Amino acid sequence: MTKISNRKVDKSYEVYFALYQSVSGTEEDKNIFKDFSPDFFDLVVVDECHRGSAAEDAAWREILEYFTSATQIGLTATPKETKFISNIDYFRKPIYTYSLKQGIMAHNYTSLYYHLIFSTKKREPWLRREYRDQVWAYMGGIARKNKMSALMIGGMPDHAHVLLRAKPTFSVSRILQLIKGGSSLWIHETFPKLKQFAWQDGYGAFSVSKSKIPSLIKYIQNQEEHHKRKTFQDEFLELLKLHDIEYDERYIWD
Image (cartoon, rainbow, N blue to C red; front, side):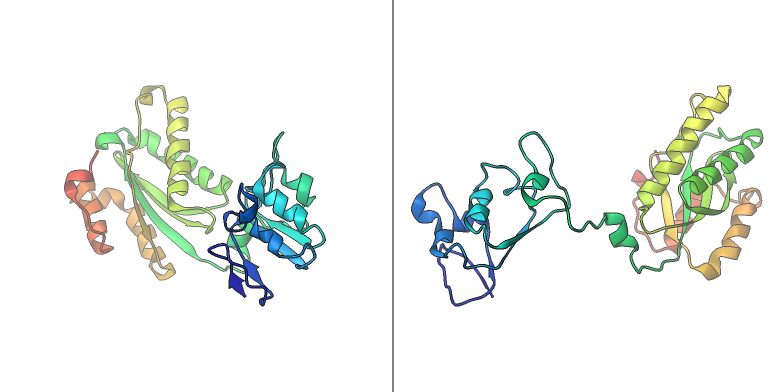
C-alpha cells in the first residue's frame, strides 16, 4: 500500500491512494496516471465522489474513463444531482445507502436524561399562575411530538425547569430550540396579554443519572417552596457550581 506523491509512481504496490491533483494536470507530462496501463487496476474507489468525478469535464472523470475496465465505486455523504453535475449519471443508482440517523442509532443503547432550566427574557414574571399549567402541558406535548419523554415540567413566573429523556439524535441545543421556540409561539397565539412574552436566549442544561430522577422531580414540584428563600439567579448559580461549570456572571444574565 502506498500514497502517490511528488508525481512519482512505484508500480510494485497493489493498493494506491492519491489526490487527483497529484496524478493529473493541464500539461500532459503531469498526467502520471497514464504511467499505469488502463487495465492495471481491478477496483477504483472514489471518496467524496460528488466533487471531482460528478461533472463531465472534471479531472477525475478523465482518470475514471482511462481505467474504464476496473470496477468503480463512488462514496459520498452528499450526492449531487443538477443539470450539469450528476453522481447517478456516472455511477448509476446507489447500491447501498446509510443515513446519518442509521449511523447514530445502529446498535446504540442510550439512557439520556436532561435537566433544562431557562428564564423569561430579563426574568420578567410573565407566567402567572393562571398560565403556567397550560404552558407546562404544552411543553410536554412538544416533547412527545418529537419522541422525547417529559418526566416533569414546572417552574415559576420567571423561569422553567424541564426534566426529560431524549434520543441521541437530538442535540441539547435542538431540544431547547424545539421547546422554547414552540412554546413561545403558542403563548403568543393563545394568551392575548402575553404578546410581548419571550424566553431568555441562553439556558442551563445538565445531565442527570437515573438514580437522581425521583429527587429532581420532587425538586421541580416544590418550586414555590424553594423560591420563598432564593431567587432564580441564586438557584441558577447553585446549579452551575454543583455541576462544576465555569462561568462569568457578567455574561449570564440577558
